[in-house]
Length: 260
Image (cartoon, rainbow, N blue to C red):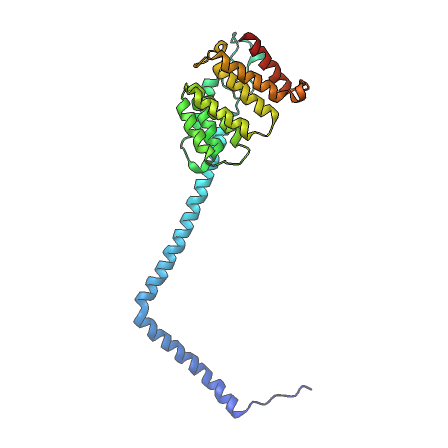
């Protein structure tokens, strides 16, 4: 049988006094609240507003990110929509596209520009360049150059940097800024690690001076030097490359040299 533990008289007195102590503390807190209820409620109100503000910020931030993603997706969707030239005969069902399409590059470009409802800097460099390219299709090369410059500021050292410099050279050439375009192709040649990229830069430089290609600053001598430089880069050991992209570039340079 378990032994019953006896409680001493002093312990009983403490147990009786405990509720009185708690009650006294509660009354003391009540008195304090009566004196300080205004600042307490003000503090609670401030905390409530703070947490509400945090919640609203999170909602707005999430909504902004979602809206940005939707805009980005819309731009890519339009840019990746194929071009299908309408059939000459309206009743020719075999030539009608099964899915969405555009009848021309210009109409697709206009749709891409319309899909990019705002120039959001957080949307990424690629979207800006994509929209800039669409504007170039409509003839606005200045807008393309602006978008490329903005993109280049964000992708230094990234793989995207080289194709952006290539597009920049193309935009500069379209604007009639041949010396700047040549300098840009030289930059491409220095940045690209591949023989194809280096040879392509030389071929495009030759094209800028080639009088047979409608060059804005024709100079047969400079064109010839650029094409020869391309062949020198591409033909390692004075041998033609194997069939492929580099071999095609060699054939292109030779053909243009023969016509000068």
